[in-house]
Image (cartoon, rainbow, N blue to C red; front, side, top):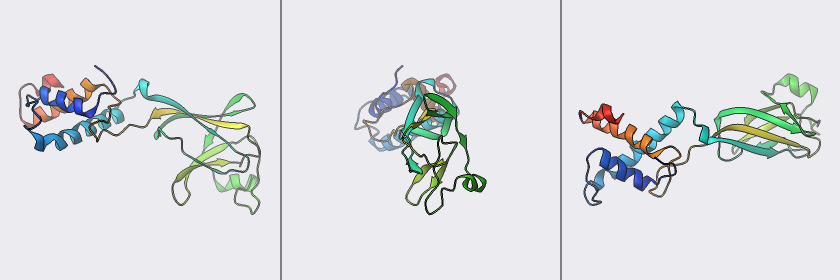
Length: 192
């Protein structure tokens, strides 16, 4: 049982669990199908369960006069658990959702956008070329940091050198049970 197992090894394990030959020349046509199944199984398990070892904390430093920020890499935005603002050494709650009433208080759309500290709200906005984080009100200095707590983005499992973020046996046995069930094999349930 291990994490960070390469896809090439997962394929070999899956072949063994489903009674296939380990010879590279035998079954070469099915390798791409096995890769797809392993990738999908990892994605499904990732989506269906919470994984404490994939919890991450990411930070974004706020800059004076800057309204939009790139999303932290490696963080799944669908699985953010909490966001805090650190201002003057204190962690504060930050509300998601910026509306027109907020812009009435501090107008981020003004010719000279209004600034204030601390930030009070955030949201995700499409800014033309990508999604970014909007902060309201726009910071008036460089003393604030956003802390994101959530789940790491799932890595690709496409190339043979790519590694699994979840346990290799878990992925292989779920995939093997699916393949064996499709073949109406008696040990499909045992693998699951």
